Amino acid sequence: MKKLIAVALLFAACSREPVHIGSKNFTESVILGELLAQKLERAGCTVDRKLDMGGTFVCDKAIRSGAIDAYVEYSGTAAEAILKKPHADVAAAYAKDHLHWGPPLGFNNTFAMIIRRDPSLAKISDLRRVQETFQPGFGYEFVERRDGWNGLLRAYDLQFAKAPKTMDLGLTYKALASGQVDLIAGNSTDGLIQSLGLVVLDDDRHYFPRYDAAVVRANGIDVKCRGASAILDSLQNTIDDAAMRKMNFEVDGKKRSVGEVVREWIDAHR
Amino acid sequence: MNAAEILRVTGEHVVIVLISVVAAIVIGIPLGIWCTRNGAASHVVLRAVDVVQTVPSLALFGLLIPIPLIGGIGARTAIVALVLYSLLPIVRNTFTGIRGVDPAVREAGVALGLTPRQLLFDVELPLAMPTIMSGVRIAVVAGIGIATIAAAIGGGGLGTFIFRGVAMVDTNLILAGAIPAALLAFFADLVLTYVERRLIR
Image 1 (cartoon, each protein chain N blue to C red):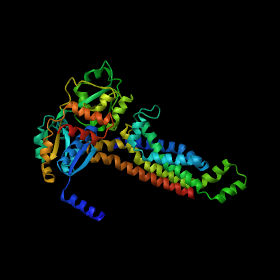
Image 2 (cartoon, rainbow over the protein chains, first blue to last red):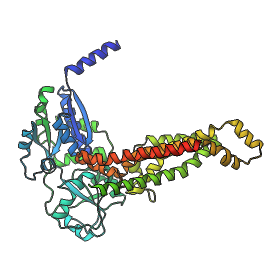
Image 3 (tube, rainbow over the protein chains, first blue to last red):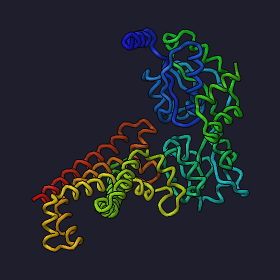
Image 4 (spheres, rainbow over the protein chains, first blue to last red):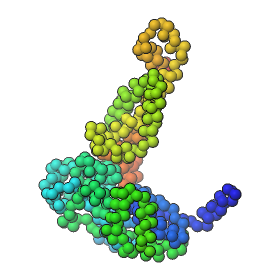
């Protein structure tokens, strides 16, 4: 009997090559990866999850090499960090590489410069007053990216006395909340901003571009599961900023499982 | 990235590993000795150093950040984590080495009227030294590899290149961190194996 099941499983696995869904290594990206996966599974696709893979460049390399078939990317990141052209036509650039840039999911997750609550600081340009004393702390990607820390210093004419402490992205909130650093770069939809009582500085010089989330997918995804691209397109404008922040908070703030939070969202939006 | 930068970062790496292993020796050898004298302690201590190995470094960092004196962002926290990870081979090998001393030799020492202190320093420790040294060697070689995680908490070292390289998918950067770490581990192993052989005589 066991052998029979094993053979049956083997057949099932061979007959349908799974759709590989990837994500970056932060909560929101994992949630969105899980969302794509569950949507496709409900439509009968076999899905292999490759969530929490790494940063932007890891995901980009994975989709270009065929290791994953779809993941959620942000328009600003695609233009600045991947294509390295700030005003690029993202969809056209992806099309040249046999990838498809899907319609926007409905929220804009821009970078957020985050501090502990301080009544004298509201805007990024206010940082000039504390540039002698503030200790910034960032993940490696924000320090290296051209639309990251160095670009921000130029755009705002800032000169921080202390070089940023670089650490794992996941530790930055803890470092800020415990007073080890004074300024971090997070995402404006991060649930932790709310739950830790932190403040997002206003980008008064509009340095950060829009980061509209959208699904990047391989053109061949429908071969693996018929109708997959239509299902992914149907997510257009279904998640607004508040909805995304809420899902992030459910996972980061309330420590609920990603699968459960996503299932709840799908059930509520049928 | 240039030769000078690689050298500087390699220096940071060596300092992190040296401080951690020396601290682990200072803490670990007495702990190992205590374990041979006290059955209850040995159960607790040996289990504890085992369990520490299973805690992922990022989780450990997350716990350490808010703690004053030993926590924070920087090399210090990384060193604390590395000391904890290095304890296992040192405590375990000290314990095993002393336990492995032939009871007849120990009895002979007692018959000669050695105090427990003399027995430890003149009989047990010298006989256990090769085993203890091999624990230290394992701690150093493994520590050189594990110390790359210091970069995850702003502690510097060769992991800086590896973390930057991974974030940017830059293979050269990753190798600039990985190759010097591998070489360090290789040479540390050679030197410490030599010391170990000399101790066996």
